[in-house]
Length: 334
Image 1 (tube, rainbow, N blue to C red):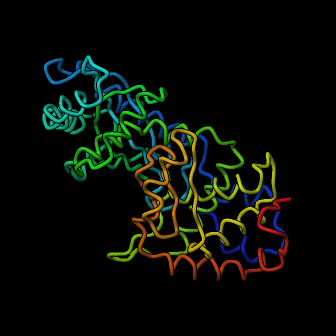
Image 2: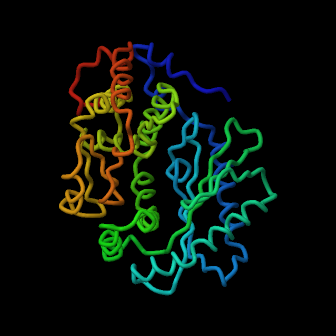
Image 3: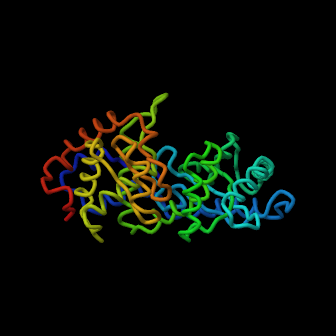
């Protein structure tokens, strides 16, 4: 399987809609194999996990594989595995305290289990306080899979009471506590992306594929993260009245216009918290602002320091034959 050519599509004034929608698609068989590997990693971690170390409640599988938005390109066939531990309480302060006391031993145990996996080719690349980075080689696959494993406490964040308790703790939390609390909210991130239609996910993949092909990796340069690009795509789709079907060229153009004009970008969602709660952080930020729909304390644009380069790349792409003659308003995708 060779990488698809985005350049050819951009030079085509009227490519079939399906050609754009499938531009960054990976083989369903390959994706199934990847997801099977992730499932096996979770099973291996959980099997006979020492009760003296901790009790595993569940696993959250995120990243592009978990979200259903993996694309053909560098570093975006990835899985984030969050191992959630049960501490016999629902009080968030107590959960933070108990997990901090156990976290080092938990991560050492998980690392040992990953190192000893023999059912497939897994290599532990890096171990940090945040988690464990691994690379898995998929037999006969076109790409390796990056896996990041982290651990936190379990909280039922589908309940507003638990979410709000975590949000309260996030205000003024230390970097270590903030990371732990944020990872406990991971299921909300996964659900937010995963709930979108397949067509919207295909648009996300196209946008991420464009970013991968259009920008070279440079030291000390932080491009928009794949998750951020997914959220910008959703923001544009919702502002176009969330159409069930659409022309991919028109939709792609809207996302690029939004990235080019990023200084006017402000995206906030109230699916999991109130608009007022998000403003506690947003009013302190400069545009662009894209608030994490799972966490009202995080503006995801803050980590990107290459917005001018992204804007130039978007402007160049907007001048290609595929997009240059589209004159409809940004909100019209038909």
